[in-house]
Image (cartoon, rainbow, N blue to C red; front, side, top):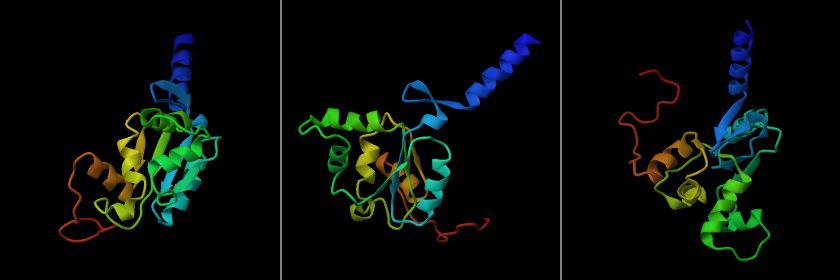
Length: 158
């Protein structure tokens, strides 16, 4: 009986924690970066993510900074850091990144702002992409992103 209660308490502990960046973190302690690709659904993501953590979700418009380095500089007041150290700052400030949906295509840099470089330089941070954000992940990792032969079919069964 004590082993079954021990097992169930271990199972509930596993349900409420996650392995992020190589160590266990409580889900309610996640530091989340949400990059907004100019889509109204971002607000829904923000509301949902906010229920998962006690930290405020950091929302940044994809074009609020001209480069990823400028965004990283805004996180840390230290003047000059080598680039490899700068990119570690993302990992120091965030446990995960969510890329919102939005208009455009990942192959058009003007549509993506800091998103593509965020993916390229955040390989140690879990990233979830929704719609355009998901396409951007595929694009950065060498996949071809094209239109479906039948056009957009959101919500339709095939």
